[in-house]
Amino acid sequence: MSQSRRPTLEDVAARAGVGRGTASRVINGATRVSTRAREAVEAAIEELGYVPNQAARSLVTRRTDAVALVIAESEERVFGEPFFAGVVRGIGGALGEAEKQLVLLIAPAERAGHIDEYLTLQHVDGVLLLSLHDDDKLPTRIRARGIPVVLGGGPMPGEGVGFVDNDNAEGARLAVAHLLERGRRKVATIAGPADMTAGHHRLAGYLTALEEAGVEPLAIEHGDFSRASGETAMRALLERHPDLDGVFAANDPMAAGALSVLREAGRSVPDDVAVVGFDDSTLAVSLGLTSVHQSADAMGRAMVDVLLEALAAPDEEPATRMLPTHLVVRASS
Image 1 (tube, one colour):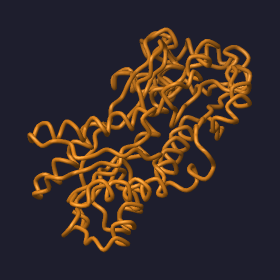
Image 2 (cartoon, rainbow, N blue to C red):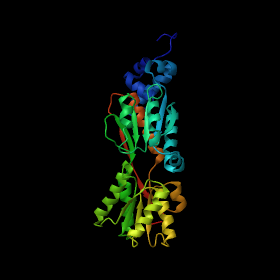
Image 3 (cartoon, rainbow, N blue to C red):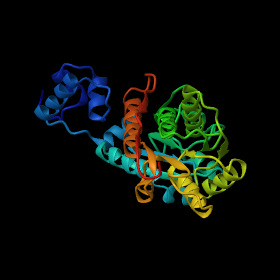
Image 4 (spheres, rainbow, N blue to C red):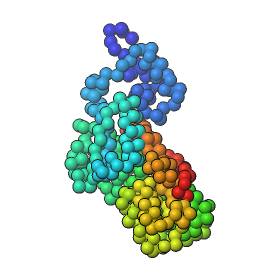
């Protein structure tokens, strides 16, 4: 190769003995590359002194090196619940390592139209979506513009949308099975929103655990994942079933609301009523709350991995990831 010109991506691929697409995936940080190919490409980059020309790459690929994270919730929830902070931290760290810029867009339903107009290839290379409701058509509209989309919490109907989720159903099943193992037989649940995937799956886990044990479901009250909704639901449950002895709340803030109402009602936890939440957040630690652990940071990083793979190989079927959950037992049960 002439010393008068800079090494190109094709030069790197030829030196590594791989295709141009594989070399591009390695350089762009995609994970679906064999260890052998990755090492060969990295060695070729080192030998040739290859440096990606960001300006030239943007002109050729029309890439902005910016990725939007859209959270379909209010500022109060986004900045008030530890789960969202963990996901954003994971996404920001992974994008930084990939030398891409994070654009955070908070989009409750009443402001969704303005966000929608911004999500074009002129502004972002890809979109990460979090906390969507079942009837939200935003993923389909974005994908129709040729922009890769990855959903945090899924799957949702529609082609071309990757997703990453925690195993909500299994986590909820473990939570309720734990209550049953502690001898509880009148177990109610404060379920999440009926129009959200996490709400569906955690309710399904509650029902599965009871069915496996041959125990009838006691009662279901829905909340919106806020502490206030947990308080309202717990009051309704106590009014309907004052003899209940176990509660599974579909997230930690709702569980915290339930604990507050039980305390006001003079119920001892866990002697009278055992309580389990979901998130294993700092709130659960401070309250001594048994909770299902899900890694928000890992979820954020996995969302970025799936998006980078989609950017590197746009013609391939988007990847999906299901992350494990487990129960952390504390004083509330």
